[in-house]
Length: 149
Image (cartoon, rainbow, N blue to C red; front, side, top):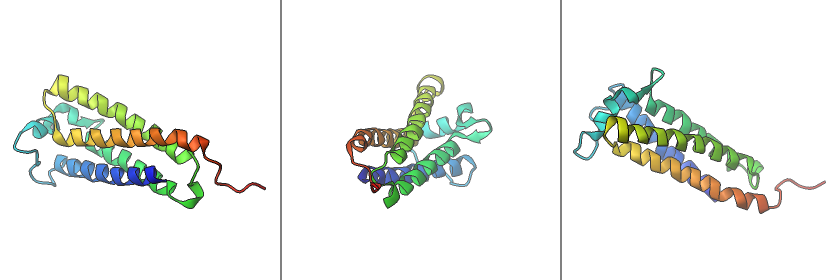
């Protein structure tokens, strides 16, 4: 259950970070704080900052919100000891890691700039993925939380 608590906190951080970048994309957050470099602005202004007409950060909002909801639902006593929420967390965060790897590749080889906020998001999604993977084996060996007839 502790891993789900950790994932909930990380997902909330990722959600807030994605919200900040989305608000910046729409001109609602003012100047992008990037430690005195223009790397973040270069990434956010690139043609890769949007996918299917939506800012990439908006996809982050969706993903992190899904992870937050799943992890909070997994904290309910009904789901304690069950592996379904953790498996869902692993699948959603695994997709997030794959998407983040693609975005990082774009930053390195197409945009030629690294956004610190994007790196922070990459670290968050990777930590969520690893936390969900680490907890899967322990759930296999746990006795079922449901009462036996």
